[in-house]
Image 1 (cartoon, one colour):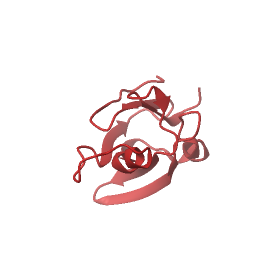
Image 2: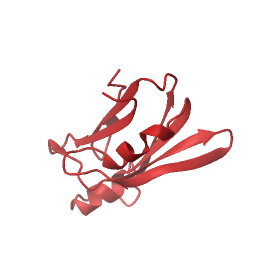
Image 3: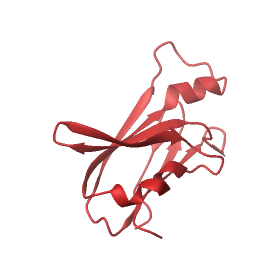
Length: 119
């Protein structure tokens, strides 16, 4: 597996990939934020836009933002006016840019699980 980042998202409430879930990834440097890419989860559950940006990942801190409430509302799920998870922000760090960092999100409208895979 190549160095860089990959993201896979599964809606564990339905047992299906979260196709259409909007997300973005940003690099954090001091007080600055740089958008790396934005898009949607594909039919295979992957955030395909990341493959085009593997060369830009440097050692440092990053944030993935997942539009959880919008995704579930688009699926027809009734959520409270103020959803428990709205835009989920997941901050993580890259140390060794020669390694691959895989982020497998397991998601519901009420919680999530994620760990570092792909080492």
